Amino acid sequence: MSTAPTTPASSDTPAGDSPLLIGSEGAVRVLTLNRPQALNAFTTGLLSQLRIALDDAAKDESVRAVLITGAGRAFCAGQDLSDPHIKPEFDETTGAVDPHRKPKAKDIGNLLDHYYIPLALRLRSMPVPTVCAVNGVAAGAGANFALGCDLVLAGQSASFIQAFSRIGLVPDCGGTWLLTRLVGRARALQLALLGDKLSAADAQAWGLIARCVADAELQSEAMQLAQKLAKLPTAALVHTRQAIDASMDLEFEDALKLEAKLQSQLGYAHDYLEGAAAFLSKRAPVFKDR
Ligand code: T3D
Image (cartoon, rainbow, N blue to C red; front, side, top):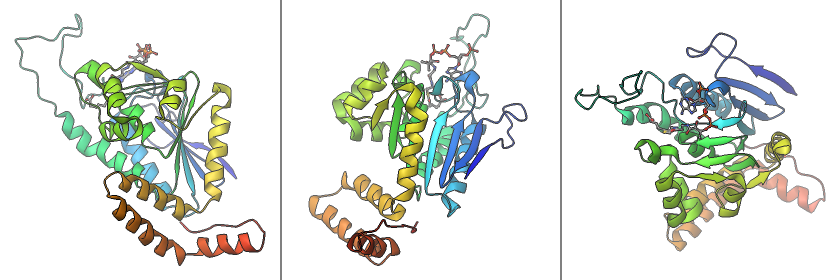
């Protein structure tokens, strides 16, 4: 079953033009960032809606995978730098910062505490697998939000930019943690210090994303992938994510013990019994645990 994207109420876009579109295709919940005029940059309104939509998907037992993408030519240009919550003071005519005027303090860390950290944690702990279809440029927090998803596909014209150093900030939305684990220290530093654009093809070659696909195929490939994940044993997939993430900080023996602990839990659950029975009776399994 497929439902048209809905348009929840929003404070930062005109009625009927919500910054987040929410739809479904069978067991896949589809979230589309929808501020194409600003390359889907994150406002506090969009960040809140995104977190609420992920909470809803997490609670809804009929959802077995989440697919996230962007409307228009970009995936997401990161924090909306004109958002009144963080916009710094400067002379709008000349674009200059007045060196004699003490800028009004706007604590960006506060923005992270209230919006980005809860969002990144929500994404990383989803009880279902997440797929990101990066349909164009993904910059700053937009790039790191995408990289926080379980499987990332990107269209061939998409790119990834750690734009933070360009504006005097450090990578956030999990960037320092994710980049180092995905591509190693040397490449993480190269991306983060220089803020250069990395093409989707290079992102795949570097192991930053799962796959780069033709632009025209991106949405259908991502949906196929999400549908495939939705049919797999959800609880086992989510425990797998948990074990892989934890492994980075564990000794080998502790990783073995964590695997045994998770296997104990899963071994009593329906999906393992179903998977093993289906294999032995040469039929397709029907998984249902979440
Ligand atoms: O306070 C904090 O910042 C804390 C949070 C930090 C998290 C972050 O994400 S920091 C990083 C913020 N993002 C950036 O610095 C990226 C800024 N954008 C760009 O560098 C470029 O737009 C892109 C490389 C992403 C794309 O370039 P291009 O040439 O394809 O498009 P464009 O012409 O620059 O942008 C098109 C429109 O989108 C333009 O509006 P206009 O002139 O047509 O009315 C542009 O201003 C707008 N836009 C793009 N990015 C942002 C944005 N508007 C607000 N905020 C943006 N981040």
